[in-house]
Image (cartoon, rainbow, N blue to C red):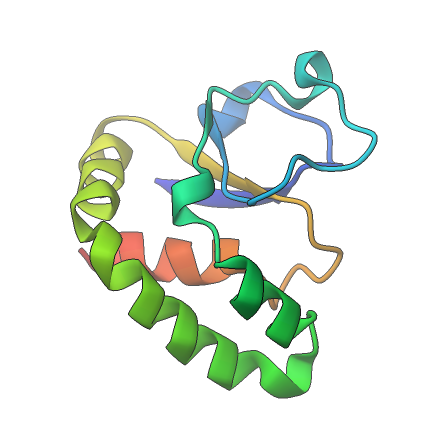
Length: 114
């Protein structure tokens, strides 16, 4: 099972393996509070793509397309996460305020499609 959750939401025992998928650490969150098992900066959108997107819902379709293109180089890592999610819950943690338009949504779709 793959879940997504904001870094600013309380962690839960239902989260399983919590994986941060942001390029930068969430502001104001301590490592102790975050309960992050892995920080996968390599799976986060590039800085240029993140800045271009700016969490503007009008750019969502373009962001998804460009981000998926960036992730082609990481398919092996996504396959590992897909295998892991078959045995235990993984939660992709992100810091964006928009719960519908962020990289964790795209990653979840890709992992579940494998």
